[in-house]
Every structure is written in C-alpha cells, then in structure tokens.
Picture 1: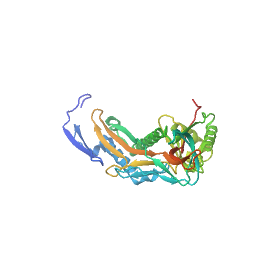
Picture 2: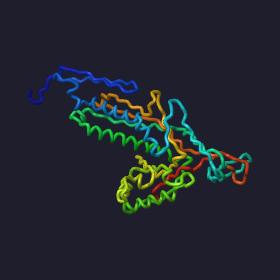
Picture 3: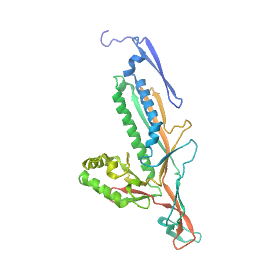
Picture 4: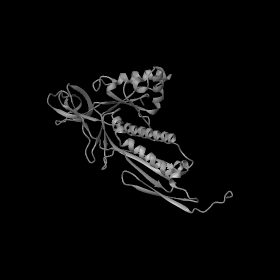
Length: 339
C-alpha cells in the first residue's frame, strides 16, 4: 500500500469491562486486517485501563490499605449508614482550659475554668464530611504505542501517591480553623537543610503539649510536602532511614496550600472512613470518555475528621457550676512570622 492510502476497516471486535459497583462499559474497535484482541494487549488502551483499575481496587479496598491506615492517625472503617464512633477518654486530673467567653445563667461572663476531674473527654462528629475524589484520564494515543509492566507499575505508584497527598491535604484543610486547633507562629526556617531540620525539631519539642502525649511518638505530624526533601536530607546526614526516624513518629505529608505543621495527639483524634453498600471504603469507577478518546479512572471516599474535643469545665470561682467547653488538643504551627 502506498503512503497516505488507507484501506477501509473491514473487521471489528468488541471489548467490555465491568467494575465492582456494576458499571459496564463497552468499546468497539475497527481494523483493516484480521486481528485478534489478544494480539493487541501491549498497545490496547482498555487492557491498560482495566489493569490499572484492578490494581487500584485490590490495594485500596484490600487488607493492605486497612493495615496501614492507622500509621499516622487512629482510624476506623464504619459500616454503611452508621455514625462515627466517638472516642471517650477519662480525664484523671484537673485541666485548665481557655474557651470562648460566654455567659452563665446569672449573666456572668467567663473566659477560663478547670476541667472536672473524672469527666470524659468526648469527640464531636464534624458537621461536614470530606469527599476525597480524584480522576486520571488514560488517553488512547498515550497507550497505543505500547507499554510495559514496569511503566504501568510506575504509573500506579504515582496515582496512589498523589491520592495520598490529596487526602492528607483535605485533612489539613479540615483541621484548620476547628475549635480544638490552636495556631502559633514559629517564624520561617532558614539556613542549610541540616540547620533547618534542627530548628524544625526544636520547634516541635517547644510546642509539644505533654498533657496530650508524653513524647512526639504519641502524636501524628502533618507537614506540607515542601518540607519533605529538607527533612529527608537531614535524615540521610544523620544516618537514618527516613524522616519518620528523624522526627520520632510517623510523618504524613500533604499537598495543596501550605497550612503549616499539625501536631495531632493519637490518643484523642481519629479519622472515620465510611463504607458503601458493597462494604468498600474507596469507590472506583472506570468509564469511557468518547469525547476525549480516553478511559477515566475515578477514585473517591468519604472521611470524617474527629478532632473536636469537648469536656465539662468548672467555671472560675465556682465549685459546682459547669459548662461544656472545647479543649485545644491540636497545635497548628505556622512556619512564618505572625501577620
């Protein structure tokens, strides 16, 4: 056949893919030669997209993900339609807390009181949950030149890494401004990575509230992704494996806007993931987008951040009058000067 003279397609084959949630997509392919689908596996967009879907679904909705979800913050997976489990921790000693000024029954305005020993610290469910959703489009012309198992593995790792950063970023966004979060400004880091890492560790130690945890290992640390290279370099210089070893606890990085560093006590805060009707935490859908000639892999989950701690406190100057107040259990450290 001469260049630019093409034969009219005279053969066709049909491919279908079904997801675990019942969605089914069908693709019809036309060719000008007698070709079988299995001969095109290394350059077939549907084969690539289906393999990506199956790998992501097996990881996110399998035992592996549930085993590691507690590494940073205590987490639960609750059945479909149920409410988050509220952690309740007994308060064994008096604790002075500062809370929003309010008036008592006789009109007195109070700003400080002591938590009642023996009362329970309870976590309130947030008014708004977080829907984490991400999508990757697998364009036909990116795959039709061929692919390998290694390239697929690299793509899969990148997709899961981006999803992890997105989820952590939404958690950081949810924490900012909550009643139980107190914000401090620690000033910008400067100098070499080693010097910055030393200053960073000093800042964590300075602002660690030992009432909620005796050491940094009892806290989850949430940091912007921009700090990760600096801390990893400092860990290498110290002969350590990674930033977790350097800091002394699990460090989770997040993407998006820089909201500072969050110190979250593991014994009080919790993430509550919702199962769907099929018993899966993560919903994955693989659909055909004919307008862009691509397969769209969509991943989503719903999580509630249980981080608003409430306790009964005695009003200042009264031995019997109490009110429910918010405990400042989470520290948000902004690495810049105060505005």
